[in-house]
Structure formats: structure tokens, C-alpha cells
Image 1 (tube, rainbow, N blue to C red):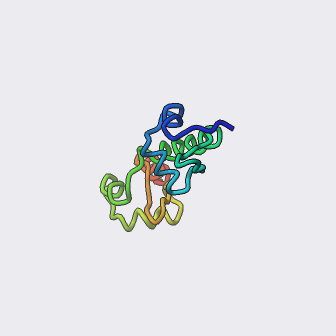
Image 2 (image 1 turned 45 degrees about the vertical axis):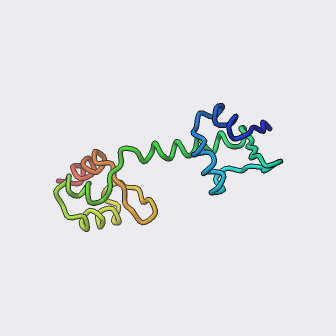
Image 3 (image 1 turned 90 degrees about the vertical axis):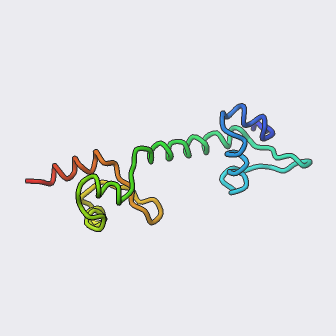
Length: 113
């Protein structure tokens, strides 16, 4: 266990103070309030931050339904139906569809005969 103040943790983890404090406030990161100070366990928070970074990187390069449909030249509703049917690769983030344009184009080409 490596307890650090928020300021010390920010320097060790290489994240912003805002990011860390917001994560604590939203209960994404555990913290201990002691004597008016917030203390965090570096060893416990480090894997959580790494997972958030991995998820954020996985979503980079992804575009929304309307943008992808426009790039392909079809209606957004048609692309949504294709995604629901499993014909094109996509990710669902909440209620939104996200697409990698190159993967969608490859799937469409592969499905054409």
C-alpha cells in the first residue's frame, strides 16, 4: 500500500489533478479522507487508470453513425440496421453506435459478390 496525497499522486501517475479529483468524486477511484486531506493508494489506482486509458484508446478513430453513413453514401438508418444485423463491425457506447470507417468498408467489400 502506497498512500499519497492527491498532489503527490498526480506527479507519480502522470495525470492531471482535475482528472484524479473528478475520478474520486465520481467514485471511480477510491480515496481516504484523513485530517482534511484526500489520500489515495497508488498501487490500487494505477490499474484503474490504465484500464480507462485502454478503453479511451479503443474508441479513438471511431466515428458516429451519421458520419460513417455519409462517408459510405447510404442512409444512417440503413447503416444502423446493418450494424444490428451484425453485417458491419461496430461498438455500442450507451445508445450510440461507433464505427471504424476502414473496418466498415472492408466488411461491405467482403459481403459484396
